[in-house]
Amino acid sequence: EESRPFAVVKPFLKFHIQGRGHPEKAYVAIVDCQTGGEWMKFNGDATGQFQPCVIPMDKVNGKKFFFRVVNKDDTGQFSAKLSDVSLSDNNEMSPKPGTP
Image 1 (spheres, rainbow, N blue to C red):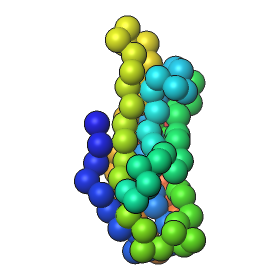
Image 2: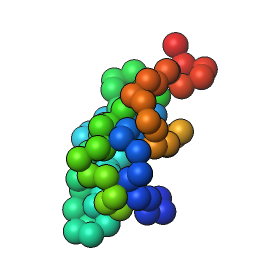
Image 3: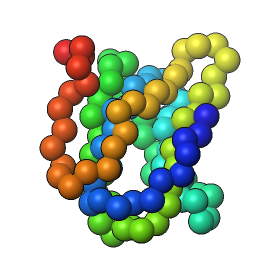
Image 4: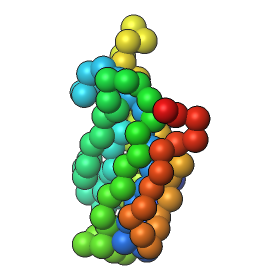
């Protein structure tokens, strides 16, 4: 599953990621639109709860990226989810509502 491309226009990218399991079978990647390469990869933690992520993007201002959510596991043991994506002027982020 892939998101629509987005241009970096603010210094921070914020999102929540949920996942558990194998780092090559279930992850979220930020993909560079120009090269098609996975610029960064993220896995959830062992709890399986949504975790906040804040990524400094000031060095790639103006570049275009998209998210790729990879779930290559047919057994259901491993999964990854992405939520609440935004570009921001600040690096403050709180836990996803409803998580401990």
